[in-house]
Amino acid sequence: MSFTREIPIIVSSDDRTTSSRKLASDRGMNNLFPRRQPRILVVDDQASIAGLMSQLLTLRGYDVVTASNVEQAEAELRKRPPDLILSDVKMPGRSGYDLCRTVKSDPATRLIPFVLITGLTDSTDKLQGIEAGADDFLNKPVLAEELTARVKSLLRVKEFTDELETVDSVLCTLGLIVEGRDPYTEGHCERLATQAAQLGRHLGLDADSILALRRGGYLHDLGKIAVPDAILKKSAPRLTPEEWAIMKQHPVTGENICKPLKSLRLVLPIIRHHHEHSDGSGYPDALRAGEIPLLPRVLQVVDVYDALVTERPYKPALSHEEAAQTMREEARQGLWDAELVDEFFSMLVQERDVA
Image 1 (cartoon, helix red, strand yellow):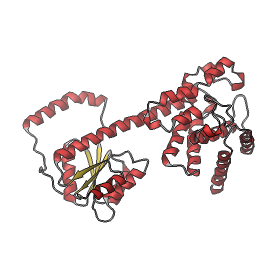
Image 2: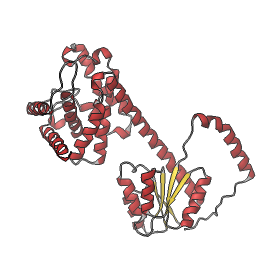
Image 3: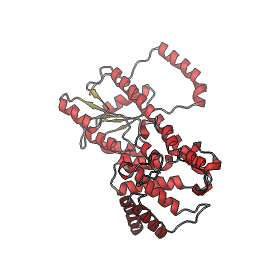
Image 4: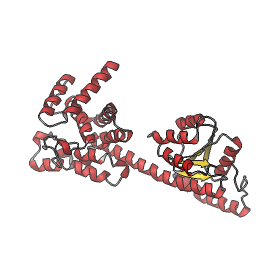
């Protein structure tokens, strides 16, 4: 692979002066709001090419790490995931396509932009890259200007994605704050997130659904942030009709808070419907068995179990056996999904046997 512009890049004296002035003027702000250098992983079996790209991108202010094969690249991913991957296609052993498929199939790395660099011109080769999940392509010989423009554009997308994930984290923290208003529910969200994800795996659900269940564990009661303490800390039997009407709005409030985030698309039904009952007696929409989506029903089973085995001011904690008997009886009465209740307790038995 060759670049049409040689490296190192010649920087004029005017450019150096401008850059120095900008650096001096920004130094105070950077102390207050330090920016992390975007990290780029360059994968190429030719050391001269990888070095050339590394030098070009380093001059542009990026933190660049190189790998000469897929195995080294995967080791770098485990050590510290980059913000962008630039990979050659043809390498000894596994190809750039293989690396791309690995990155895009892992929920922890699939949002990292991946660029395949290839000298192949057949449309089927590009189609193979698209099927592997590549976000962009660069053809050999690579233009320095095109490389830096593509890198800048894709890193902007990655920065926006990271900001959305930060918002997700803030919302999950708010969920924990809501939980913290009631000392008797300490640890409830974490337990729900963990066990709901475990039940999702037990049921063979896909990675997106499992992630949604975990997030739902933290966010399902987020709408209670709008419920006054005087109502929130009362037990349900002691609520007046007016107070109960306010309490029953918390799933709708939580959904409205999270609705602007597309990343929480699968979590929204969990938030809104985790208090629905199979017989239509739940809230806020009085849905029946066939109308309640699967993910809310999964979280609901875990939520009910945790409530039964946890002590509250108005009730003692039930034993595991008592909780199982209660939930199976309530499922027969039409409150919960009986099949999911059976699967949940089957999972707990399997976990206990393994332990």
